Length: 479
Image (cartoon, rainbow, N blue to C red):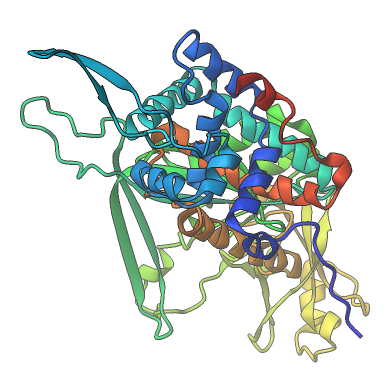
């Protein structure tokens, strides 16, 4: 009988909660003390008609409730008294103001109707501008993300073991056309990006797909088991993904050595395939790269004997005349008598030697090989039952040969977890309206902070000793 182990956190459990309950989880989990104090300091002695704490909660509510515009959020606040109360606004309409005008009959008192308890678009616009400034100058929004990463590592002992990377294109509201007078676009921080991918279809024909957009690139490193983001970066669309991934991993492992020690695998798609980066991951961080291989061997395809879809192999070296390898890190042997080709059996990574070990397929699988004795004799091996052994150093080709080679059981298991990145991207766009959200620029990171806070809050909800009161801390000082 098979028993299913339930994870300490799953998004299915979060999705079943009401909007108000999810908002309460986020507000409880966000480490927002510093940003709240900074926002209060920016207001100084200004009017406190709408408290900083209430405005901040309303901004977070706009993300949790999936509002694409400030006007939509204001309408929600005006019709939802429960949301007003959770945010900290008084649900009773504000007192009417009396203004006095001088006329022919003397001074006339004019009473205006009671005002809505919810802030207006002007109030939210100014508040949002302050949040953007705090992120640009002091990194307070991204600082919350780093704090919650540490909290998740404390709550989940295996958080960070399996990481994955993915890049997402974010289109700008600007068309990308330059103004004839100024020579600038309406979104000067954005630029043009281009993604090109290719492959071979079922009929053996090659295909190419090119995507261009004007805007930004969202780069995400996430835990592929719990589907929770670990690190983010928002750049111009033209920034190279492989360079940004290299920079992000360096910053992440430098700032958080514990997650470097935990991480065993880092997966990415074939667009990030590169020997230098794979070598750096393993030699400097002891992280196994799980990155699909690109088809870069072109010379063989130009030959007249090449057939579309044919497997391309190259000799492994002079010492192995009948041993060949492919771009997919497969090692093949060719029988010196019959010419039959067989895939050699992968038998693991030898860490002290930094080599991949492959054995004779006839010995491993009990097959009959006509050239058994000649193959072993030419290689100077004993013709015992263990069979011929071929060791491939990682240095032979760092792009193709990695500690966990492509196609092995461990590689497939780790690479299959990459589907979590697709679900994360779908959740960011579908549940958090990341691309169409009213929060713009670097402050978009607050939407990703909310995503992490939902996870932290849900885990803590099942552990009362980890919870803090909604009326404690910064909320008591800023309202």
